[in-house]
Image (cartoon, rainbow, N blue to C red; front, side):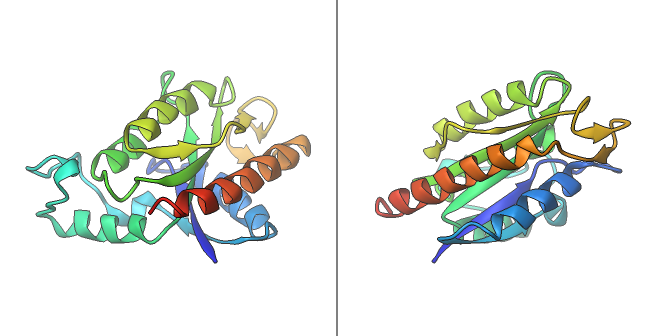
Length: 184
């Protein structure tokens, strides 16, 4: 059975990211072919990248990096739930990516973005990052608007149509994760 992580993309106090990630996870459990689990980057307390060697070397000197690497390694795919901050993803999620390299290789990713423009610019940046670490990403994504999918910009209340977008992305992700597994 494939294992896919729903990865939070924010460590911000009072974040709405956790609510969005739990919504993804609730719907993901209905998708056949994979087991989905929540991976909260806040649980790893990753400081700004503090490894002396490049991630490509896989020589991790810090325990927090080794724990992060062990967690990321066990999954066949990922759903990244990202806020959009200043036309990009969060620094916390970018930092979490930068800690590792080979652990991401030849796996699949899907994206759920949210922000004033649906998080599309954050996801576009994540697609570039994912490509660099050889993480294949599915075309469809979920675009949640702070104006229509959140009440008062803080309480997550997605429109019904977002479930269809999520299901399309999740089904593609499971297919791609299965295909990418043959490369590892």
